[in-house]
Length: 108
Image (spheres, helix red, strand yellow):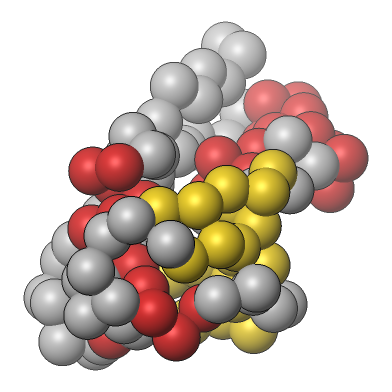
């Protein structure tokens, strides 16, 4: 059993240690904001924070994050900093496509 913190919650998975963090996040925990783009660590679509460092989750075996703190875009959306950014986009009439932020609705 691999235990780590995901978006501030203590969780565990019985995924094989060689499974990609990307796949575990999406398939086991249904956090679909983290996307697979290139699968080679080049595009950044799968970026997550691991112990406050931005990492490509497609390159990280789940077995290497025992005890780590992982934050996905869903976790960032819960932060006060994100709320400020979201409100600022809305006030300025900025457009966010929503590709990387599932369920985000900008005020019109």
